[in-house]
Image (cartoon, rainbow, N blue to C red; front, side, top):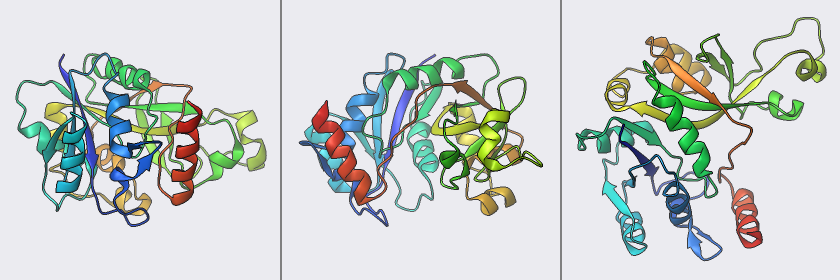
Length: 247
């Protein structure tokens, strides 16, 4: 099954304008993401999908593949779908976050392995929560699973709720899963879900994947023991620069 990786990269970021072009130890953010993703053995190629000529110029400068996409897209998923529409001979797409300069190629391959299974429409990664602080943080998405290793629901709140037990003890009493925000889609599924209207649960939780569940798409998961590191703030950027210098 031929699978491509697409890195949505927009220039306009509220907290870090021009984020894909920010320098991390001598390389731009987008170059680091591209080079990491290109090491995944199960990807046939990697393409940057962007809405800005400055990003196009940067990707071309380091020899990467890039495609201009519409500026009106509301999400990276929509940007991936525009690229996938133009490529007929692929079976699946991995949506790779453009602000994770240290993404592990092995995680991409793990995701693709799950996506290759029969009847899997969408695949993503989860890991067990390790700290109560992370569990209670609304910026980390939680997910509950069924017996087929499919997502039943995603939330910013800790789920399930352990009645009568202090939250400080929840990790001792139950297993909680953190969502790792990387997705793989069968090409046909990707083109379908980007035509769906936003759902009520998505609007409430501000989690795009709830739209797919509301419309009866199945999201299969693979388990990892690694988390991801996204650059969203200046503090994150400084941390990424220090991490890169240590390698």
